Image (cartoon, rainbow over all chains, first blue to last red):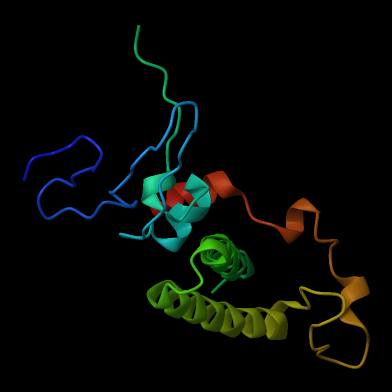
Amino acid sequence: MQNDNKTAIAPAGECLPYEAEIAPDSLARAYVPYQKICSYFSPSKGLVNGTIFPGLYKPYRCKEA
Amino acid sequence: MSEKELLKKLTVLDFMAVDLQLYLDTHPDDTEAVEKYNSVIKDADLLRSQYEKMYGPLFSFRSYNHGDTFKWVGEPWPWKAEANFNIEEAEKEDK
């Protein structure tokens, strides 16, 4: 399938936690893709991580110099 | 189960319910997420009534009062350390 770089492709078998068909229709308009649920963190991990959705867990880790 | 363990399990479920609610605000038709929300609420309510029976009320205005004196005033205030659990320790337990 030719990828028109507008559609995100999930690696085989994996679930993409957001809608794939994103069609930005103009300049200067930010677009946040719609969330889809693939999985949940365990309840206790969710509290510690601050979210129960792995797709939203983005800790800032400083790169080793 | 100790008070702190029960409180932690309850807090964890309540956190999950809040996160699910935020998701359901924008995805009200996601039936799977609604089912997950309902099961979390059911589990949390079960733990909550167990906790309140054993250790005292968690709400000043919607908890059953076990005993003939008003337990709310006697409990440690909710913001006191002894009324809560330490999240770092909780994190270690999950490792």
